[in-house]
Structures are given as structure tokens and as C-alpha cells.
Image (cartoon, rainbow, N blue to C red; front, side, top):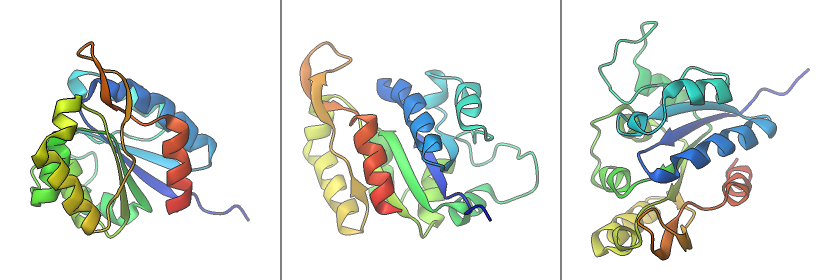
Length: 181
């Protein structure tokens, strides 16, 4: 009898590093994991949901909590219950701040709040945003609540400068996912 797949909820936010989520989905699937993507509305401005649907083999959930579902279900609760692990990659300063403040104004933040699953966050943003005292305070607060983080690496940022803020390498994220499962 085949062992049941573990369910990963992959939260995707509007960082230029969003393109790396495509490779992450492939790698997670190669590990035998089912990937269910929740995109923020802003992320959908950078990559269309059909890309993630094709790669994951599963329906992609749009960012709005009031979007009409295909079937009747309280989506954030159903997704939260389904999750063996929630991974947010890339994670913007915005989603980190929302989670730290308990703000539930989109499907991703509501799903995280409603879930008892572990949460792994991989930030990707401008170095100044990442090192901002408020962002660092939010990271520290989430860590104190048991959230796990994979720190961004140093490299060429979208703004053209070299600094800390690049999304962690896919191999590093996958390794941490396996460890947390």
C-alpha cells in the first residue's frame, strides 16, 4: 500500500523572487509531496496562477477570502486542516508583518492563522526592508511563536545592489521542509 502524500501549502507572495517558487514546487513534488499553492493577489500580478497549477498538478487558490469557491467549503479552514506544513516562499515584509500582528485579510494569512501545522518562512526582499527594525522585530516575534525561518542570502538584489535579501536556495528550503516533516 502506497504511503499517503504529505500536503504542503505553499504561500507565494509578491517578491521578484517568485520565479524561484516554480523550481521549489518541482523539487517538493519530486520528494513525493503534494503542493497546494495559495497566491496573494499581488503575487498574481507577477505570475499567473496557471503556471503554479501546471507545476503542482493541483488547483491554485487565489488571494481573496471572498473569491467564489468551485465547491462550497470554508477554504482557509479546509486548507489549514489539510496542511502538514505551510511554507511561505518568497515571503515579503508585508506577509511577515501581517502574521506577526495577527492580521487575517487574505486567504494566505487566514490559512496560517487557522492552521495547527508548522510554518516555514523564506523571506525575499530588499536588504533595507529585511534589516528594518520593525521587520526584524516581526521575525523575532514569529520565531518566539514557533515559526521557522530560512534567512535570505547575500546576492544581487532586484534593485541592482548586492545585499542580504535573496530567497534561500531551493535545495536549502527542501532540506528544511524534509526536516520539519
